[in-house]
Amino acid sequence: MKPRQAPMPAVLRQGRPPRHPALAIRCPHCAAAPDMRCTTRAGRTRTTRLIPCPARLDAHALTDVCPTCQVAAGTPCRDSRGHETAVHTARYTTAQETR
Image 1 (cartoon, rainbow, N blue to C red):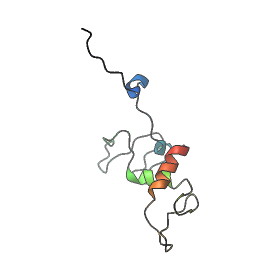
Image 2 (tube, one colour):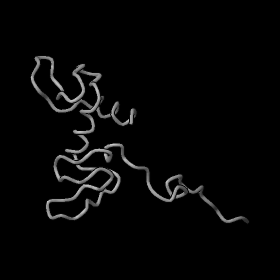
Image 3 (cartoon, one colour):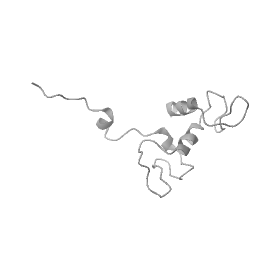
Image 4 (cartoon, rainbow, N blue to C red):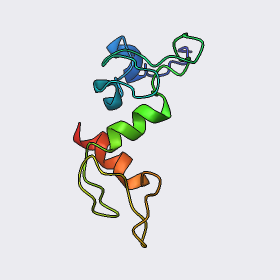
């Protein structure tokens, strides 16, 4: 009887996990340089290796045009009444796909 073998995940075959596209910009919250991981308030690197801090994700999403409210790159998202609102989910998706 053959031993059971599972296929090796692609992340392990590559040797290192895929880089999040938001790491290409400086973090506005913790001031981590591009290609460096975000840090906590205590100065330690974040334990979530693949996901930068929320401020960096927002800054990265603002580099593209929002498909929901159609505001220009660098402009915060707006709701239906024209008030500034949180970044739309579709804008995060667009920013990750284009980088």
